[in-house]
Figure (cartoon, each protein chain N blue to C red):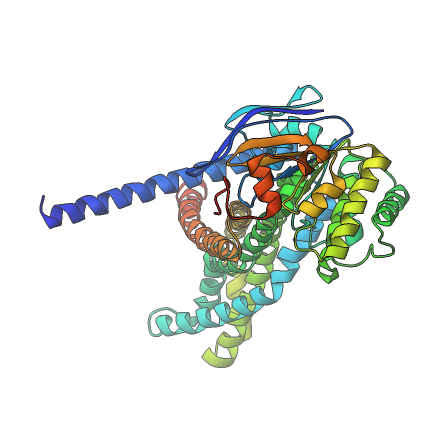
Length: 248
Length: 269
C-alpha cells in the first residue's frame, strides 16, 4: 500500500503540489486525473523518489520515502516499475538491452536466463523477435510496449504509469489499456496511472482521484466517478471550459 | 547618485554575481566528483562500459589529433627556422620542436581538440538523455546513473588522453622533421641527433601528467553540464557550449598551474 500525506512541492514560484493526501491500496489500480500542468507527473516522480518533497510523507508498505538517501531509495525502487510518458528508452541500446538493463544491474543471472526473461516479457506485451531493433526504428505504440516490458522485467510490486496512452491512436491506446489490465491480473501489482485520457481511465481504474491546483479534489470508485456531481470532475468529464477549473 | 556611479555599482554587482555563480559551479562540480568517487568505491562499473568509452574517446579522436599534430609540428619547424635565422644554429631546430611539443604543444593542443570533440559529445549525449527522462528511468530502476554514465567516461578520458598525446607528440616531431629536411634544409642526421641530445624523461612525464589531468577535466565538465541540462534542444545546445568553453578555459588555467608546479618546484634543477 502507498500512503501519501500532506505532500507539498514548489517549483519556482508555482506551488505544484499543495498538500496531497492519497492512498493506493494493495492490488488496486488508481487513476489520477487532472488537466495538464496540475502536478500529476510530479506526484508520480515523488512516489519513486525522483523528486524531493518540500513537506509531507509517502509511505510504501509502511516504509517512508521522503527524506531518504539515494542509496536507500535505490533499494525501494527495485520494487517499482515505471512507464514514462515518452517511454524513455535508452536510445544507444537495442530493445533487448533496454529490457535486460535492470536484470544486468541487479541480478546475477546467466545470459541465457536474461535472454529468456527478455523474450518472455516482450511476448507479454505482444512483441516478438525485436530484441535487436533500435528504439529509434519503432513506432510510438511499440516504444510504449517496450517501455512496459522494461518496467515489468523485475516483477515489480508497484507499477507507475505516466500518461500511458498520450500521443497514441485510439486502437494502440486500447492495446496499452488492455496490457495494463492484464499485467495487473497477471502480476497482481498495485498500480498508479496518471492520465488525462478519460476513455483510458475508465478502462483500467478500480478507483479514481482528481488533482487540481496541487490538491486532490475528488476520490472515489470508477462507478462513483461516472455518476459524480463533483463540479471539478464533472467539468473535466464534460470537457467544458465553463466551471471551477480555469483553463491555463 | 550620478549615472557614472550607478554604472560603476552595476558593474561591481555583476562581477560579484559572476564570482558567486563561478563559486557555486565549482561547488556543484566538486559535489558531483564526490558522488562519482563514492559510487565507484561501492561498485566499480563494468569494464566493458569503460572499454566502450575508451574506444569512443581515444580511437575516435585519433584521426583529428593526427592532422592537428602533423601541422603543429610543421608550423613549429617553419616558425623556429625563421626565428633562428642568423641567431641560433639550425642543429637546435629539432630540440626546440621536440621539447616545445612534448612539454606544451602536444598535451595542450590535444586537450583543446579532444575537449571540443569529446566534451561536446559527452554533454550532448547525457543532456539528451536527461531531457528525454532516460536518466530518470535509470534512477527509477534503482540504478545509480553516476556509476553507469559518468564514471566510465571520466575513467576512459583520463586514461586515453595520455595515450593520444603520445601519438600526437610522435606525429608532431615527424611533421617537424618533414618540413625541417625538405623545406628548411636541415640534414636528417642532424635533426635526429638533436632529438637524441635533448630527449629528457622529465619532459615526457610532465606532458603525460598534464594529459592525464586534462582528460579528467574534459570528461568531468562534459558529464557535469550534460547532467545539469534543463529544457529541450536549446538546453542541450547550451550544455554543449558550456562544456566545451569551460573545459578549454580550465585546461589553459590548469596548464599554467601545472607548469609552475612542475618546472619551478618539482623538476627545478
